[in-house]
Picture 1: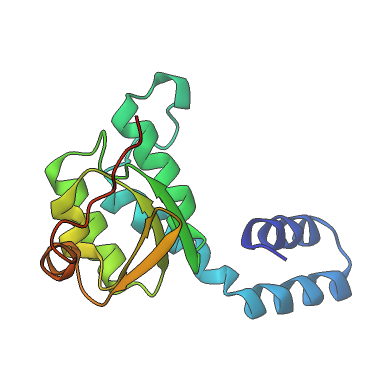
Picture 2: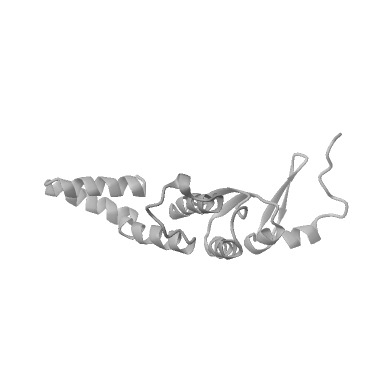
Length: 158
């Protein structure tokens, strides 16, 4: 059961008067770390500079929406994360925070980005798909460029 479902079930249980249901809900909260969930949500939102918690999504800028989507994903602490141009719409402070967060986490990334500096700072191992072959590089993007055989570039067929 996911955090949000567990928390919702707990909130329903405490509104009722069935002590057994409340006890079960509390045990589920313990099991999933639900007590720390709100703290983690507020911490990540704060780090991403989302402070107007009552503001409607449609009123937010593109950068704010991107940070909300990122926060929603990171709060769940995924083991595998797919990011499409994660630094677009983020300012320098947010990019640095995201770099730090990703380097400290144990998440596996599948990422599409043109930001080679972000790749350099976040990636420790890169898999490159080229013409149906996969090449593995144990290092960051700069290491990939140094290690890649000379002349090995993806060629586009005309």
